[in-house]
Image 1 (cartoon, helix red, strand yellow):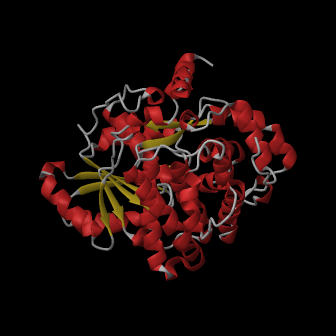
Image 2: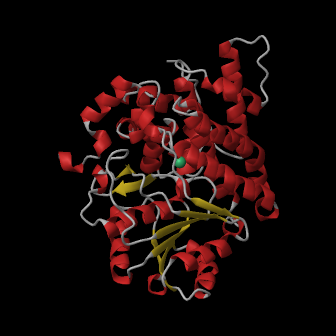
Image 3: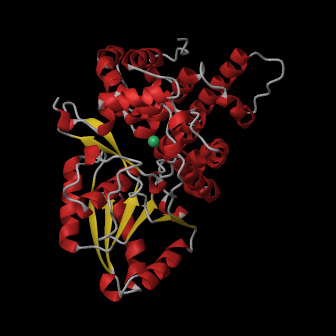
Length: 430
Ligand SMILES: [Fe+2]
């Protein structure tokens, strides 16, 4: 593959640099805290509308609403408010799952024609990530998305779009408050998920109104909820946290354990659980967005792409293995024992850890989530097919940006071994 096709984090020099520095040594560059203005509840949309009215000159009141086929049904809720401040608007329901680069280019063309000063994104992670990338391509058409350097490379966005407003319709991705987008490079065969990081793609405003998530079906509630759990837990155990971020991740884990089962079971009949899961997801989003996820995300990105499995389901499945892999180098998981109601009395480190992993797996099973690949039903994967693709899966996982920040150094061979163990739930003993 030619060098131009690689992302910055696939370059060998970057991998070498990170592996010699180790996680905590480079944490300095990951200790800035970014987030949006966050409006919650039923009054949030009114408050945002008032804010836009105050901030935008009449000639600037042009809003593009980016959504997908499914979430375009929510657009009217927004446009009704925009009409009250004489805002011109256009709905573009062109976002699609996996965020292929072609879609991003199409979105930038729509912007070029309509010239929005405000962009709303209504949807799950794919819509959020589409908006982030469209924002870059619209404002900086010459920018190579694969080579945007986080931490150091300022892009100079917001010269055309004044406000990007995130309206999540799922509770889990946290994408409404992160500086990351996962997109698909369709020029690779097979296509590969790649990450783009920039502190300028955070949404300026986030609206958490339970109205937009209340009708999520149980499967989506479960899968996106597992994504939130993986963000918070993976980030906490990763050893990159700071006290500010640790507090958010701990609370996000606690809230998810308490409210996700209720949200899955009762859906729109339990708006309290819906609302708590929105907040848990947001806290986990800030939690991992300002540190890193665990390798459950590199394992899950690659696995999900190759076998067509939902992102949240993929990372939730690999979460126990990701933590088991870090067991040799950290005790951070011990802080989580009270959340899983495990008492440390007279137990060895090994015993406690096994109890912790079992409690985590029990929780995942309690909401009908899979804890090993052979348990997966959406889709069902045959063992032979799975094993035959593990070299590719390991290669993609190893080239994932998350691999750079694994507290315990990892490589392709170790990834392959983890994938093998995850077939039937074997404990990571290497
Ligand atoms: Fe995720």
